[in-house]
Length: 224
Picture (cartoon, rainbow, N blue to C red):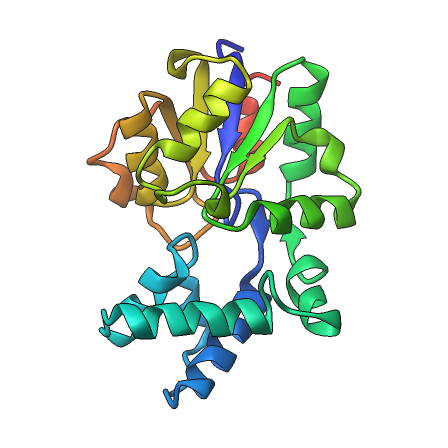
């Protein structure tokens, strides 16, 4: 394999938190007096900041309402949730088919694997810990650990710095054009993974070295 590191987005790239995210949206919208979105409507927001997802679904760009939705989501299923509510995200998130195998192959090859996501870093670590797979990751940079969200490359550059890698040495893999734009801004090669809601043709306008149908195909592309 030509790369010295492989970085990943999380939601719909390595994992699926749809059920918990949809429940958080339903509870938040209900508390705000809004009609509850469907699961398919919520799926289209996965990978966005919660504030942007709220605006995408409502057309409301009021920063106060955005922040209130974020607070309600965090309290109901997110980082501030307690007890059984917290388990919705941690235990309800599943790794996608091929994720553990790909990460294991990278570890076996001595290639660092990192996650750069808008999801809180602690949540991602707890998900992998619950799955018994945390040792497969060298680093997680969550959206709460940077001041600017993707597609700004701050998180990507932080991961490069912490792993002592250059952008040219790393492949960034993700399921959305937000991820593609992040890789472009950060100077990394990009591979799209079609596990989410973004169609293949959406990546045509962004530099990419490959488009994988799933993680097994990505592993074959990496010759692992």
